[in-house]
Image (cartoon, rainbow, N blue to C red; front, side):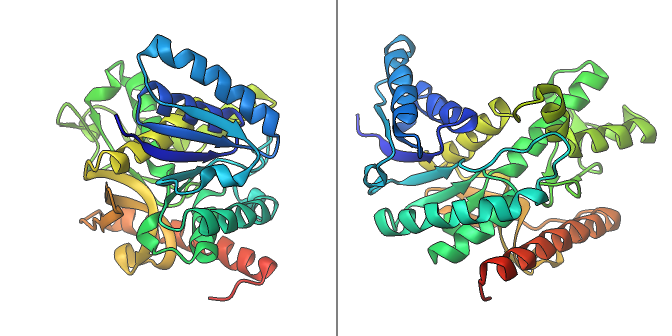
Length: 315
């Protein structure tokens, strides 16, 4: 069986779990790259030896040699500094900007036809940076965050109401930060509007918990950040592309006027398939939600402008 090739850059908790999930689901042959080559090699070997127990024929190798990523179909970037307690995603911007720029230069050189999926925070800004540095078409550069934010929102609703998360239909849009916008008006549980199952105060608390979900995990872990949910969210995004599913997923994609935002990356619904972002879906949301989404877009734009100034990037 011929499998696609996926490169995962960064062999930390998120990257190694992404690689593990890709192999476990037999979605692709995997290359795991990290500046600590032996560390990446050891992770890859451990995952490889587990593959037979999962009836997977996927192959995986690891190291620090970027030539291994040559001709990859998808590159998933997880490398960078993780948040520490009390640190916002936006505070990571300068620390991770140079790391991502160097990685993307290698991607551009070695796999110019690849689709990039960004996981590194601050996600929307790093996705925009990858787009600018790579020179790839915008539909070939995607940020993972909306799938993760939506999963957290659904999990918190399910926990609050005592229901099965799979029965919840919800979507979280906007930047992957404290200004993200869970869409309340269209959230349902087995077709029943959330507003009929929870009062305004409860919904407000669920929204706030979703916005702070990553920080809640960072605070509990003390020395790390979330990785199981981010990893499977990245894999779900990659699977939609690898299997050409035409899935409508909330993803950080390039917007050019949709939802009142322009020339930035922002979490909105998009059809993902073999070509990457095949269509951005713009649908009616409430006026309040539209205003919140535009506020979120402005926060992303402000951070992008700071990054461009710091790194000398021109529009």
